[in-house]
Image 1 (cartoon, one colour):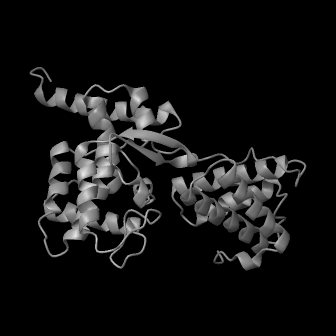
Image 2 (image 1 turned 120 degrees about the vertical axis):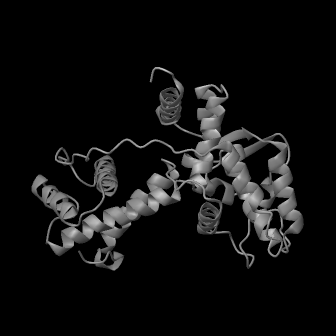
Image 3 (image 1 turned 90 degrees about the vertical axis):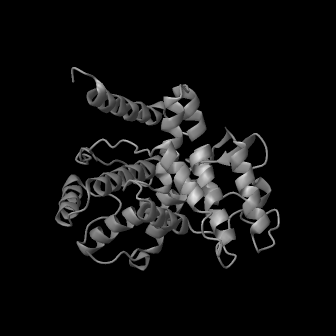
Length: 305
């Protein structure tokens, strides 16, 4: 397959795609990662059509079938194929709504069955161990304090890493509540532990850069916006040095926040609001995790197991 290249598309088609992306962003509230993935996916289909002299905007079921075959030939993962199918259904639905096309049969687009995945949590003691270990290296104290503050927001307040890193200085946790801008450009309020506020304050006190109120709260080593990859690498290093489970990632800290609240008796609806899930079914996956843990515990301890 030819490398994706927007210059291969004519101006009219490029404008249609840009309009669709703008619609998903401003009206549907899709996040930047989803927008980037969808844009890449629709370009992939358009380049496929160009390479095979197919109609881009009104493909028949035979063209769609050929594209599905092309995806299978590339040995893409089921999740990637499912996302590309979802992307194209969304795109052509937009074209129908905008009356760019009169009709289209996408019934041949059947998403592959995906293995149901469950969030993987980590033990509270291991999470605490990871957070406190960041204070061992005094040579880069402000960076360690920064990473610790970010991880406190993930584990202590259930933020996504993108939500934590999008905070501005004026939004620094300081009080009982924090307003977070989440997926779909929806705000939610999350309660704060004093240790989170203290951790962020310690970082700000040690930060060598002068932050104005509109500046990003968390900065990189040279004063620019902190990349999520930096935090991901820091957690990877902790995983190796502390012998943490292989699934320990920044997002696992958010999962830990949810499962530990659930284990403590928190209401599922309340957890849904705290995590910013639009659907309760997404939050209900955490009950499956707890049931699995409970079953494992029962088998290990019950005298008749």
